[in-house]
Length: 361
Image (cartoon, rainbow, N blue to C red):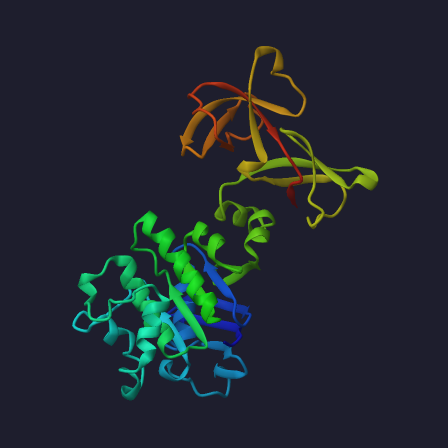
């Protein structure tokens, strides 16, 4: 396993810039997700790492070896010791599972024990003689992963490998892939536009926007401490509110919002100590209390009515329109258990801090 280092990477297609000075350090043996919307440059980055395309500027290093960069000859894909798993698996339909897995190995090793060991590792014992059309979608992706691992790569690149699978199978296969990569000790880079996939699989997540990485952090930090409001909205549901920052002496800072006065996360970079701010509240930081007329003005609560309730059994996502017309158009609340709330039901919404806040110009 090797560290992967990208510095000042630029790539344009014609007059359209795709990557505009991208920097990324992937620690050896880690599982990193590259997250971003369609067109943000995720697949372009992966193709540059694999060596399928060449950057216009910048450098790529695998361990101590620079494979692209100023004064360095471009190292082709077959010499990079990189395993690549494309979106559809791209198996050869006329070859057996064993032949697909061993395709990248030297001829003398294709009939050795390596192929069987890899099939055992990916849970396909006894399927060596089958053909791709005799496998399920999840099994085909496991074969593609085994093929990528066959050459004992220093880095494995996964280009949205679960996109074509149904929801239940996708969750199962990605858990298997994560476990296999960790067991092999392989440095892995996953490209995805699925936030849940990135949050559940990766050690660290790099979010691409406009050809650059806007934040590179552990899943919890990315979700709870996003760099800006746009990133907060992109990574999960978010309530973005206006607030007024106030100093509270030794107890730290607080922010006054339509949901009451809430403590500010110590990590928030705010200056000065007072003024208008933008506040993030995740849906699970809100709770619903059934409202009675006498409770409508309860301090620290927001009165409103249910607009919609998406019920999932184990939890529900409730959208509430506040009665106060000076607040947001709606707030999103994630609840656990309990019956589904009917549309139009009066509720009180209470918030729990601390919150992340950003200064407003």
